[in-house]
Image (cartoon, rainbow, N blue to C red):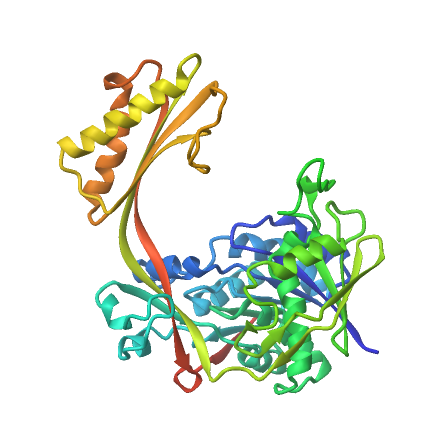
Length: 443
């Protein structure tokens, strides 16, 4: 039975670079997939593109490509990523430049576009999934709208002979499932196989989370070698069963427990996991430890896909102003509490307007509302508030900073910030309104 090996080169935009190099050099993989696009990331990328038409792709794209392109070329590995973010065309041109600088030839690079549906969405009155209100309530605030594409444009690029595929918003599992459909000839209405492929993609999409990252809990769930955590590989068979593993000798571990935790990550209902390609069902999945760092997974299935695509809508939602300061030694908590009282009074005296505010003593009540019974040796004051204007957001941090000379004894290490909030809501758009496209450049 034919088997292919897919490696996960990154689980988010800022992820480590060297595990992917290890996969390309020693993993024996056929495909290297980078998943680097979170919900808000693309909204921020759209803002960057507005300022510079050549910007808007992943900040680490250049470093990642320089580190693995020669290895991928030498070892016949195809590379797929959503690092194009808001600007896959510019990202592909950058990859072409890097490949040329590295002396690589005969490389075909594809850009997958069409996920940007901002102008389409602006003409609708679609209900927002989270609130039920019309999207028109966001008029004047929307900065981005990107549909989650499925496997079709990725398949078109693979059939077109692409060695490197750079997309914008594509559903995370689809990045990993496209090679399976391409290699095994699965049909796009074989919901059972697509459910299995989606499970593989979901297990790999967060990179090191399935090999022990975000799993370790000393004394309870010990994981060795997290400083050089190996990223996962899926050995996938034509029938959709798969073995999750990693490069021998790398850090971390692949256990049934790590795979179970990742399978349940961000899954609200294991029987109904919506993707653009299939409604996956993970409720009957089995996992078996078949060797050191080798877990066999099977039993996923799926149902017919929905007639709509989810669209993430990014919009400006005011500002967050924040200030912090530390107090240490005897009476630290009392001095921190006094500092918070002073800032609260100052914000009232100076007329700073905000819709939400938090007064936290980090280490005392910032996560759990009830204070610890023991007096802490140090506390960090934090005041954060949501405001309509940047001016009011700046005032929050300023009032904390002035505690240096106007507040309790011994304050130090003040920090402050004022940031615009880019929030995300969602709508469902009919598939016919979304027009994916693939373009190529060659070196």
